[in-house]
Length: 386
Image 1: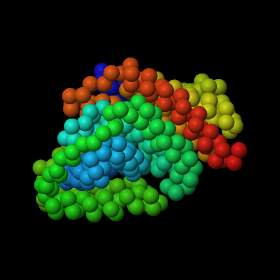
Image 2: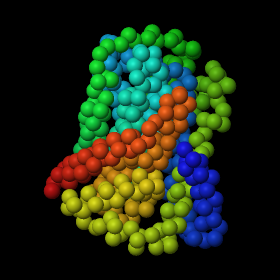
Image 3: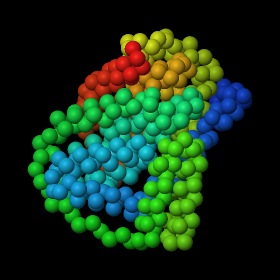
Image 4: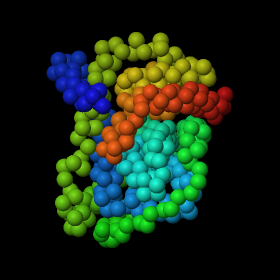
C-alpha cells in the first residue's frame, strides 16, 4: 500500500500549494467549504458512532446471531454475510463495511473452520457495489444529493434499479467463483458474553434510532452527530478509556479535503474543457454508458472521489449524475486504490495475516465490472422511461 502512504503525504501539500498560490481562487475555496463541511462532519460523526458501536459489542453480537441463523450451512452463512455487507454499506457507508465487517467476518469464518477468502472478497466487492442506494452509503452520493437537493427517498428513487443490479450481479459472480468453498456444513462457535451489557443496550438503542433518522430527510450530519454525542457521553461514564483521538478519522478527512481542493483548483484552471469531450453530453443509453465508463476508468486509475469530482460539472442532469455514480461507485473493483474502502480492506486483511493476490483480484474485478456496468446503466436508462 505504498501508493496510499504517498497519497496521504503528498496530496495535502499539493492542496496547500493550490490555496497559497491562488490556483484555487478565494471565492471558489469559500464556496467549496460551504458545500463540503456538513459532509465532512457527517463522515467524522459516523466514524465515531460505528467505532463506539463496535467497542460496545453490537457488531460482534450481530455477527454471532447471523452465524446461528445459518444453522450450520456454509452457503447460508455466506448469504447472511451478503446481507450484512449490503445493510452495513447502505446505512453506514462502504468504508465502515471495509473497516468493521472485514475482521468480524474473517474471524467468524475461522471460528467455523472455513476458508476466509470467499467471505473477505464478498465484503470488499459489496462494500463498493452496494454503495449506490442512499446518500449516506458513499461520499459521492452525498455530493450528488447536495448538488441536486434531493431527499433520501428521492435519491433512492433515482438509483434503486442500478443499486439492485450492483448487488445481484457481483453475488452471482462470487457464487460462481467460490461455489465449491461455499458448499457443506460447519459448526458455529458459541457467542461470547457482552463485556458491558449497559453499553451494549445503549448501542442497540442508538442504532435503532439512527437508522430511520438517516433516511428520514433530516440532515444526515445532525442525525449522525446526535448519535455520536449520545454514545460519547455513555462511554465517558462507562468506559472512558475507549474515548481517544483515534476515533477521529484524521487521515481520511485530510485525504478527502485535499482531493476536494485539488480537483476544484483543476476546474478553476480549465479541467472542464479536457474532460467534456471524454464524457459526452447526451442521455441515450450509449451516452450514459460512455460517462459511466469514463468514471469507472478514472476511479480505477486514480480513485473514485477525484474521478467523480472531475466529471461532476459535465454530468449536468440527474440522469447523467446517476450514470456517473454507477461508474465511480460500482466499478472500483480492479485496482486496490480504486476506492478508500478497498485500501482499508487490504490493510485489515494484512493485519489478520491474509495476503491478497492482486492479479487474480484485478482480473475477477474486471470481469464483474464488464458485466455490471452496462447492466446497471441499461436499467437506469430503461427506468428513466426510454
